[in-house]
Each structure stands twice: as C-alpha cells, then as structure tokens.
Image 1 (cartoon, rainbow, N blue to C red):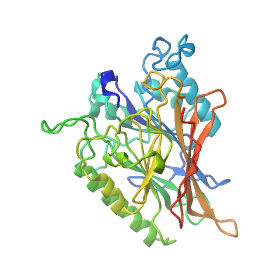
Image 2: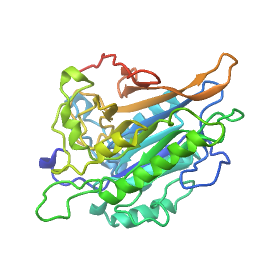
Image 3: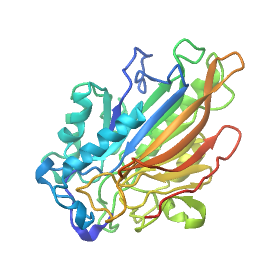
Length: 374
C-alpha cells in the first residue's frame, strides 16, 4: 500500500448502518438488519481508506493543481454525504482515519453502526485492542469486540445477520450473512516480513460460524434448499488478489497487490465454506477491480479519502453492493436472487461506473465492463 510514502496515521474499518435497528432474534450475529419491504433489497456502501485527519487543516494528497486550493479532509466528508444521500444504503462499510471524526456523520444522522479495525490503528494513541474497546462502547454501535467464549487472534471478528422482509416466511431467518475479520497489521514473526494475515484461530471461528448458519438456514422451518449467501469484509488483500489480469476483472489495477508475504489459506477456507459469494477489501487505494476466482468475487473498493494517497486526475470513489431477493408469483419475498455492484465517483455528476452482477442464483454471474480507466 504505497509503502514508500511512509507510515500513515491511524485508520479503522467502520460499518455504518443506515436502516433503523428493529427488534430481532437473539444470538451472536443478531443485528436488527433486514431487507426492505418495498423493493426486497439490501444495499451496502463500502467506503475504503478514508484517512481522515484534522479537517480543514489537512491538505489533500495526489490531486490536480487546480484542485489543490482549499482542498482538505472536508472534501472527503462532502463526498461521503453526497454518496450517502444518492444511494440511501442500508449499511455502510468504510475505512477511515481518526475514528471520532469518521463516526461523527453516523452520530449526527442518528444511525446505528458497527466497526472493526485496519492495519494502522496501533500507530495512534491507543493499542489495537484499545481502539476496538473504545468502538464497542460508543453510542448506537453494533460492533463486537470478538465472539464470546472463543480464543481468537485480532480484534473485531464477528458476523451480522440480515433477516428477510418483515411479515414474510423468512422474516426471522438470516437470508444474507456478513462476516468481518481483523486482517491484522504487520507480521509478528521475525522471519516473515511484511503485513499480517488472517490467523488459524480466526479461520476456525469463521468455518464454525458459516457451518452453523448454513445448518440453521436449511434445517429449521421454513427449510431452504441452499445456504444463504455470505459477504466477507476485511482490510488487507489476500495473495489470491494477484491472480487477475485486465482480461478477467472489472475495474483497474494501478499498483501492486500489498498482501502478506505468506498465504495463510483463508481464501481456500472461504471456498470450502460454500456460502461466500464475494470478499471486499481496501488497503491499495488506486486499485478498484473485482475478479472471480473459484466461485468467489474478490473486490477492491478504491480509495475515497483525499488525505490518503491516490492518483491525480483519478476520481476518489466508493463501492456499492446491492442484494436483491426473489419474489414469488404471489408477491412473497423469498431468499436472495442476485448480488450486484457498482462504484460512485466523486466527480461533478457523482458518476456510476462498472455495474456488474457478482452472483446470480443458478448462474456464475456476469461482468459488464464500462470503467473509466482514468
């Protein structure tokens, strides 16, 4: 992640929930989140690498000369508000520097939210553990420090369940599962340089959680024939993100893949789990592609923060994921039918680019390339 630029200030991985929390079933992943009645949709906005610092006093990096006068963290804030209003998401996942400033929009808009941590948090005034403990104690949070009663590496490993439409047969079943994992910061093994990785204890928790959710979904009434799809969010890319070329991804790759120097096997773990349809990351700010490998879409968000490194003339951006339910002939909402994605650019028109289907029930999904490439 542009290591030659030096150490970046602290950042964290945040999830803002834009739908009012409803009373839901009890359990580790219970969140109060559910699909919308009118459209049968659930929309996630991913805002990666916000790197918010000191507001108006923080100058922008990597912008065109004409953009430099007056450009600051406030440009990042303005973009965030623009895209929130335009997309009206049900959940916002993003990476941001300075947690109180990053969370402020959610507090101001009285939105419940959840959070995890990225790879620079230990460089601030709090330890990584301290950051997570601070987050789980804040107002309206859905954050979890870690699963209860489980010995696990990192902080902020948890899942959120998204229930079906209220008043339908699947109203109390999680028809979409969201998994959040701490991908660490830097290797603590002297003989292994570079970034940290998702550890065996985290993978064991993920496997158990996925298996339990699948069993529950398919064995409890009303029984379902296939597992509910899962989406996974973490910060640092897996080595498998290096598997693609411009011929087999949608978006752009403009810098190297800053993954750990070893492969801990988490991609294989996701494939074996059987429910994961896509994984979403940040970290490398000027990559924004999605590519499919062994049935799983691996997606970058592209950087949104003006204080973070970027590329002059290449618009800051945020990724949207829209999940659509099936509808019966009688008008009843059922399980998930499709998962789509696109990106919003911080330009004059808030342009939408790279619309594609990540997953479609009964098919492998399809790509529709129309990226700007600028």
